[in-house]
Length: 144
Length: 142
Image (cartoon, rainbow over all chains, first blue to last red; front, side):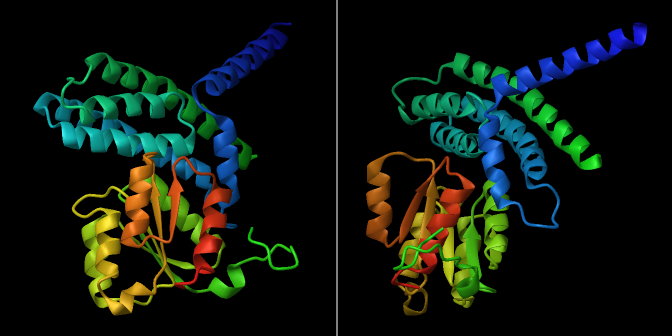
């Protein structure tokens, strides 16, 4: 009985992971990118996730530094860049939030709203977890 | 996939097999995605990470079937590279696809005015990229 209970718990966790992933990222976007997979090469989606999880925090840190320096032009370009790759990978609300930062930065008359940057960082925490769940799922399927 | 005059799907892998395609993008995610699609199409991607690198390469190498540039890049933007290419006879024939997440129609107009052959807005699907590549290879300039 106890073992049965553990199975149920594990199943519940899997359901929660799947729900969390579905909420934070658009899985249909990733599935669509599978078309670009080259036969015999490592899983493209896993590679793209790894690249994004490496790149996005760097861009977020850069944006915070550029905001402190009040370098609006560079801030706008960095937000624009993160917006593009986030949209291509279906990274939740990140593209919309980046667009908001870009707009603030491009319009020199209005200082960048710090709150948007905070929201962007909070969103990345969710997106990161969801991408890691998806990476884990794909890696375990390939290992079977 | 592009279709022929009889409405049949035509793969462009045959005509592009081994063709060198210049890719200039500062984003490693987009670079990786484009590289994968080009390899699937049988092309040889030649990848650089910014506009200056693309400019330097094009000064000595014009052996490209096509080029794909990001609009905004460090040092030199995609549009600057296209302008340079159109000032050199040996580079003029290379069709260029411009990629950007910019939705402003002025940006698109500027790109075409500078000489871009196709314009692909982010986010794009792998199918959209593949189809645009097919059109790029079959374009008049190629």
